[in-house]
Each structure stands twice: as structure tokens, then as C-alpha cells.
Length: 144
Image (cartoon, rainbow, N blue to C red):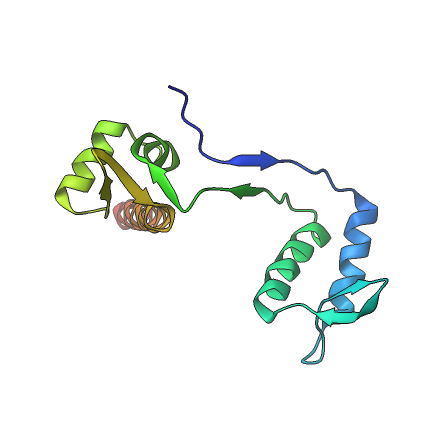
């Protein structure tokens, strides 16, 4: 059985895209800036603030030449998919579920996890890894 983590579509940007993104961001500067959608059959409609912020983050990334990757993941994932998202084995994930470290629920006889719970666990794991690395660096500096 294949494990599918997310759909992905790569779009390459160039210097012209960066310049356009910089112009749009400059026009949005200050408290009066907002993004809107314009159709030929109606007046421009402002986007919801949260959607505007998301698009501004994308524009900022394009303007600075960073890579933007957009993926889609279902609200609920299988244990195989969750394990792939976390970069761990499925048996290790099942131990974490059993220990209560990651919430999960049953759908019939199958274990499912909310994608948000998996992403929270992933962020927490990375924070622990960064803290451990910082402690290691600090210990190394103390030895010198």
C-alpha cells in the first residue's frame, strides 16, 4: 500500500515575479492596505483579512526569492500517512498513540489522526530537537 502525504504542485518564479510581488507588497504597506478580488461583472471585493495575510506571506516569499511550496493534506490521516509526515516508523507512531503523546481515534477498527494533531506533534518534536542542539552547543562552549 502506498503512503500518500500530500498533493504538491511546484511553480517556479523569476525576477519579474519578485518585482511584481514587491510592488504589490509596497502598495499594501500601512493600515489601509488590503487585497481584493475583481471580476468583470462586479466591483472589487476585499478578501477576508486572514486570506489577505496568507497571500501577503506568499508574496513576501516570492519578493525575496524564497521557495514557496503549497501542499494539501486531508483533515484526517491514516497512521501510515501520519508516520510519514513525522518521519518516524508506523510502530513508533503507534507507541506514541498508546502512550497518549499524540491523540488519535478509531474509525471502525482503523486508527486515524487529525492532521492538525500530527502537525502540532511535528512542531513540538522540532522544538525539542532545537533545544537539545542548543544545549549541546552551550555545553561545548562551556568546555572551551
